Every structure is written in structure tokens, then in C-alpha cells.
Image (cartoon, rainbow, N blue to C red; front, side):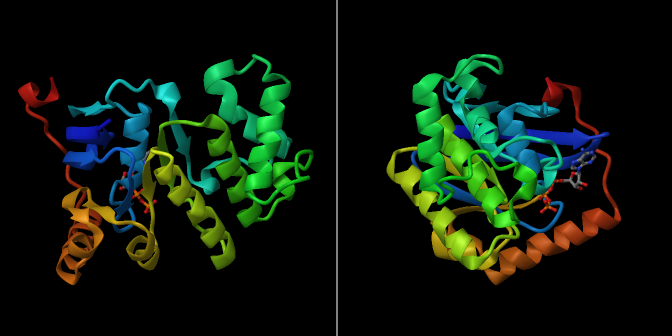
Length: 248
Ligand SMILES: Nc1ncnc2c1ncn2[C@@H]1O[C@H](COP(=O)(O)OP(=O)(O)OP(=O)(O)O)[C@@H](O)[C@H]1O
């Protein structure tokens, strides 16, 4: 299985967030996406999910349906004021097989309970998600991914605002998923975490700065180039004029 972006440009109001990005993500492997704020990292995940449509190029999912992709958005983007329980949140991970109104049955409930136990939240089923700490909520999001049981897992800043112990516990799932033969693509903002836990990194700054073994990608020269590009385009965001034949 190869997940690939081929010459992909994605724009918001004609301003490209990612520009002619090509990248092939090795199957059964965990890859980090790293880069400065506004580099287009989340945009890549949303494009893989089909939430955003490329202006140029295309995405290859090697036969996977969108329902076979587990996507964890940034926790900050999820409204936790809604009166939703922990169990209901985890059960949404089964929607891709049951549909939003299909029942999960006893087996599904047992799987959800097991997923919560696996992430260290046994007994939290009936709690409202609004009552949880940031780290506990992040564990719930991991339990939802466990519930989905997908071959491709996309994580958007899964360790943002969680403490070292929670990060350590949750990183073990990334290792476990890799060992189970799943493909993991994770957006991270912590340089040390990427270096410590991911062998392969895509360094992004609207375009691909480098992609490959982490130690050859996260060099001072590459990081300086990424920061330079990010600073420049934030000050002068270009309008992308896509030639017609590229857009096709
Ligand atoms: N919904 C949107 N409407 C308009 N512009 C957007 C939208 N979402 C993202 N952008 C812009 O696209 C660019 C890339 O955003 P994206 O969220 O993909 O970056 P990122 O690398 O994930 O950033 P961060 O590290 O800050 O989360 C940014 O300049 C951002 O302002």
C-alpha cells in the first residue's frame, strides 16, 4: 500500500496552502510531518481525507476507501461543550462500518470499553467529554482510533498540550499500530519527539523542503530554509495562478 500526493496544490481563496507537493508515504510505517506554523501540515491530512480538493495533482490511496482512514483532528478543533459522553465519542469510531444511526451491538460496546481500558480510561464511559482534562480527552481520541481499526491513520498534533507521561503512553500506540502493519502519518510540532520516535519525516513549508530519514531531513540548513519560506509567504502570501493543463 502506498499513499501518495502527486503534484498537489491546495488553496484557500486562491492562496495556496500547499504548492505542488509530491510525497509517497511508505506503507506499514509511521511518518512524521513537521514544519513551521502555517506550513500546510493540517492541509495535507485534510486533503488525504478528501475534505479538501486539490487545484492541481491528485491523491493516491491505493484502493483504500475514505472509510478505511482514521483521522484525528486537532483536539482544539473539537467542540467539547456538547453534552456527549466519552463512550459515545469512542463509538463514533465505528460509524464507518455501522453508519451514524446503526447500532454497534454488544460486541461493539465491549470493543469500546476495551479501547478505553487500553488508553487508561477504564470506568470513564459515562463521563461527559467536557469534564475531561486535555490529556484525558486526547486519550479518548486515541480510543476512538482504536475502535475504528483502520489500515491508514492520520493524526493531527496528537500530543499538543499533553504532559510527558500521556505523550509517552500515547506514542506507544503509534509503535503498536506500526507493528500491526498500519500506516501512520502524524503532524507533530515538537522537534525532539519527531527525532526520538519517527524514522521518516516530511519537512514542509508550503512545499516539500525534504523527505526521508529523519536525521537527514531535520538538519539546521533544512529547518532554516523552511522557516525562511514560512516567514516570507506569511508576509506576502502569493496568489496561485494554476495553468489550465495543471489544474486538469
Ligand atoms: N479554512 C481556511 N481558510 C483560509 N485559510 C486557511 C484555512 N485553513 C488553513 N488556512 C491557511 O492555510 C495555510 C496552511 O494552514 P494549515 O492549517 O494547513 O497549516 P499547519 O502547518 O497545519 O499550521 P499549524 O502548525 O499552525 O497548525 C495557513 O496560511 C492558513 O492560514
